[in-house]
Length: 408
Image 1 (cartoon, rainbow, N blue to C red):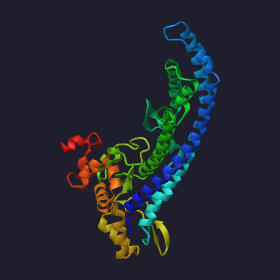
Image 2: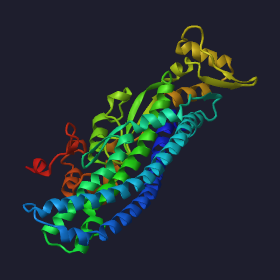
Image 3: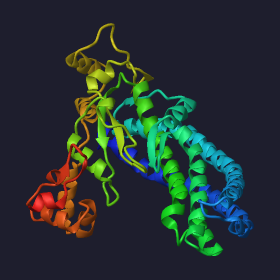
Image 4: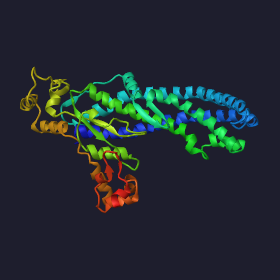
C-alpha cells in the first residue's frame, strides 16, 4: 500500500497529463477562430494590394508618403478585422480557463488531496479532510503568473494574450513594403504573410503564442490549485518536492532542476517557480507532516464502533508515545497503528531522475536517451559510463554542457 505522499505524487502526475489534453482542446478551438482571422485579413489585403502597388514609390520619392498613408490605412483595416475576431478568441479562452479553474479547484481537493488520504489510509479507521479554496481566487492567482512567450511578449497571463494581435500589425506592414521593394508579385506577398506552409516561421508567431499561452495557463491553474490547497492546510504540510515529468519532451531547464534538487523536501519558495518555460509540465508537490504532527492538528477523523468523530488533539500537544496509547484506547490494533504511522510519515519512494535514466540504459532505450541528452554523442558518453547523467548538465546555467567541453 502506498504512502500518502506516494499517492499524492501519482495522482498529481496523472492529472498533469489530463491538463495537457484540456490545454490542447482550448488551444485548438482558439486556433479555429484565428484561422477565420487570417482568412478575413487575407481577403482585405487581396482587395487592396493592386491599389497599393500603383501608389508605391521609393522611400526617397514624394510618392512614398502617399503610399505609406495608403498602406497604413489598409493595415489598420486588417488590424480592425483582427481586433474584432480576437475579442471572440479572448472571450473563448478566458471563459474556458475560468471554467477550468472552477473544475480544478474541486478536482484537486477531492480527487488528489482527499483521494490520496483515502487510498493511503485504506483499511485504517482514519480519514483526513483537506480544506478547499475559492475558484475565483485560484483563477486570479493563475492569471497573474508572470511568463514569457518570446517575440517580446512578456508579462502576466492576464495581460499577455491582449498583446498578441498588436504584434502582427507591424509585421504585415513590413512584409508588404518588403515585397514591393523586392519586386514580388501580389500573390507572393500575400503568401509571405498568410500562407502557413510557405511562411510557417513568421506566421506561426501568433499561432504558437496562442497555443503556448493556453497550455501554460492551464498548467498554471493546476499548479496554483495544488499550492493554494496545500497553503490552506499548511498545518498538515511539511514541505514540497520538485516533480518533473520525464520523457523525450522534458526541457533542459527542468532536467537540470531535477538533478539539482533531487528528492529534497523544502519550502515552496525555495524551488524555481512553475511554470519554468512555455508548456512546462513540472510541478511542486506537497509532502505531509509526520503522523504524530498530523494527529495533533485536530483535522483527523476516526471511525469506531460508536461512529465517526474528530480525533481531537489534547489541550497540549501530545507526544508520539501518548498518541500511540490513545490510539490503542480507541480500539486500534498494533498492526493498524503501524500501518497508519508508515503511510502518513512515509515519503515518496519515487525513482530519482538518475534511477530512471539508468533503467532506460539497461533496457537499451537508445532513442529516448538520445532525445533526453540532446544529442547521440552526449547520450553515448552516458551509456559508456564516462559521465554521470548529472555531470552532463550545468546546474548553474541549467543547460546541457556543450559537447566540445566534454570531449576535449
